[in-house]
Image 1 (spheres, helix red, strand yellow):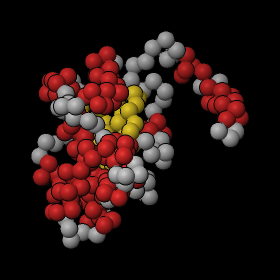
Image 2 (tube, rainbow, N blue to C red):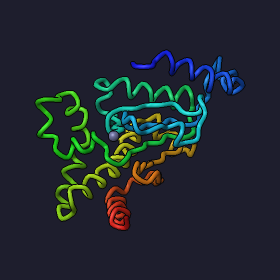
Image 3 (cartoon, rainbow, N blue to C red):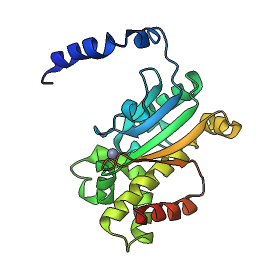
Image 4 (cartoon, protein in one colour):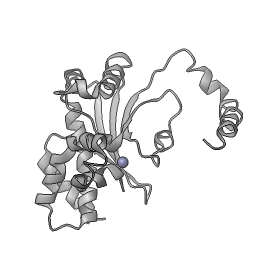
Length: 216
Ligand SMILES: [Zn+2]
């Protein structure tokens, strides 16, 4: 990376040394309150968005912030292991799934047939959310391509909350009220982050999403 050494020196001098007390508190252990699952997209700066310090947020990032369902953990063991560790060992209070505008992963999913030959791994990953794409294509066919993409980006967040609930160790804590699930949608163009609570009623949620989208 260009300027790597300069960046690291700047981090040590302008961030670490200035906030040494903050870092001293987390030398020997971490106690994050939140597992934050979001897209790998470089435009999402989670700590800045959440106004959080190092040690507060445990991260999972992948293309289109997808959480594999419980039925096939072996295929996606790194994601499942991080969820398990966050919930069972770190005992986070919150799991947040954050989608975002202009998501390249969701945009690719809208036209996945064009990508399968060139990007087989990416396509296979994105195909986990294919039912959402098909649902939106069918039910909201009168909406523009851009509107359909926003719907997919938002519905995809809800789908991941539902997917996380397929893990017994998550479901038990959510049911007991010791773990909270939250969906976020970051609009990069406006800086507005919408907050959606977990709700298993996908149909009702979809209608709300459409209202949100058409309300601007
Ligand atoms: Zn994305």
